[in-house]
Length: 518
RNA sequence: GGCGCUAUCGAAUAAGGGUUUAGUUCGCGGCCCUCUCAAGGCUGAAAUCCGGGUUCGAAUCCCGGUAGCGCUACCA
Image 1: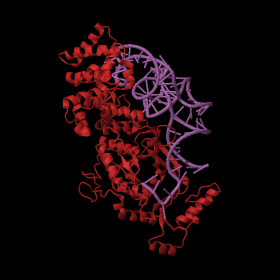
Image 2 (image 1 turned 90 degrees about the vertical axis):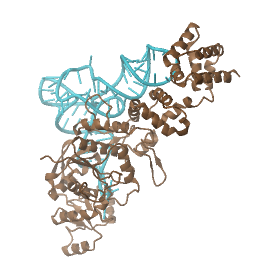
Image 3 (image 1 turned 180 degrees about the horizontal axis):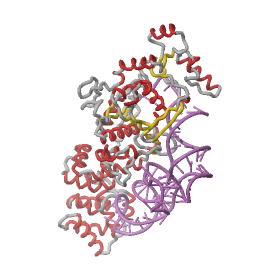
Image 4 (image 1 turned 120 degrees about the vertical axis):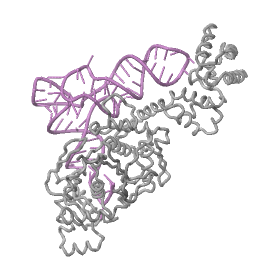
């Protein structure tokens, strides 16, 4: 029987989740949901040195904002499940709470001869590295050098026993076999082969915090949690041979997960991967949510910048994947239906902020007006409380074509809620001259007689009036806009008049005439 | 330096040996619409990294070079 598909997203709480991390989580989620399987969130906090308070909560909140809810690892409130239960037999999901289970696996490897205790101090190794560097070489702890270093392979048995019994001062390293071709398969990249001689004896158990390294904890947890596919970033590809060898050493090959390595997200310009700095420099968010670090440094977030989570997710899905059709707008559920690892692109994806804005604009346009109104009211508070839903809806409907983000509504629609306090001097100079001061009062009186005051009828009537009198269409219309908006840019004059209503329009025109006369 | 991955318009990508004068979207330019700004319609410029090979035929398969990226920690 085919195993139930189970994938995991396993971030390290060393800071806010980067949008590249969100993409990895998204692809894992899409894969799991399409297969009717489980998406697991596991917190890999085995790096006690780099742990950042709040990072875990940030990760969970970011995923929730995106609509990505783990089947395991987090409860309904967004907390990491800490104890095993019928529903979560694989708990806990935080590696720091699983520390008790890794030691025996590390020791098992030593007993079987696949790993060994190493007693070299960090200082000794650093010295070796700098010495090698001076000769333009790289020091590697491997089959060539381990015979002359301090470890359980070289030291007498009784001394090894004594040192290990002391409980501190040792690490466990994996003994990479000599001259073996490690043959691997990647769901995205295909077949890969590497000679084991190019690998080094990676530390599996750390002395400093008495915790397993990523490599050990990861393999053990993936095995214990019955993970079927590992979808992770490209930065892990170089350690894939080690992971294969680890599964082999444990004898877990039959249930070994399949691997898929995702390419990195690259910065919009220049070279290298997308970093926090690029966002600051080019003016776009790199993180899903706003983040303030310990130094008080603020990193903007997509959420706070006015992106809809649906647009953010849609944009992210298309960074390194495409459905093979020309459809670009997909909801999360639609993505679940069409996503395949086969269509994930192998090369790095350069992030394009313009395209991200475009996606948001598309979602803004599709959004039901009622939602727009409710959200606008929530954001504006008392300033717009006196206006009806119908009025606000009309305003937003008219303005949504001209903005990319709902956050832009505040400035873009202000004149609908407040009478212009001043008129753009450049526009005044351009339009308020020649016959215009004489014409506008006539137009004003004409408008006062228009009935019904609908967009179509108002537009047609005013245009006819101007044509019949052979007045300059542009100047008259722009002057009306100037009185309505305060500026010479904005929506169609008839559109605005219909929304504002006759009384308000006349008030504004009268005010304009009175102001400019003096 | 070593090892690995990757390589199509400015960006994201399509084309799975012939359907290709290499398509689409974003961006950029032009035109139309027009009372301004948008939006929309039409349209233009713009790419297969280089060199070999395989083949009747290569963007596509193979080899080499180059470039970019990643890894090369008791970080993940």
